[in-house]
Amino acid sequence: MSEPPAGHVYVTRLLTDDAMAELQELGHPLVVGAERPPARDELLRHVTGAAAVVCTLADRIDAAVLDAAGPQLTPV
Image (cartoon, rainbow, N blue to C red; front, side):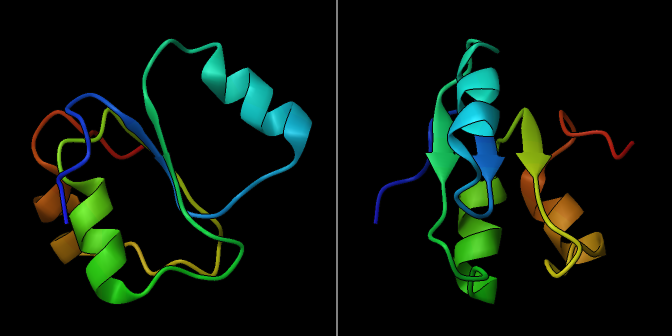
């Protein structure tokens, strides 16, 4: 599988049309998951190089995910 583009916004799950439209206006490429929770390997792969991650409370975002993302991603 190919790597997501650098500086992308990773959205772990498909959101409402309004939310997705707002995210598209940010000007970053979007990498969007399915309507199901991402598998651990998907999460680690798609977070790499992300400028931002939009996740749900059910997504396990831990130190390994933050390390995989890289230093450009700052937890808030």
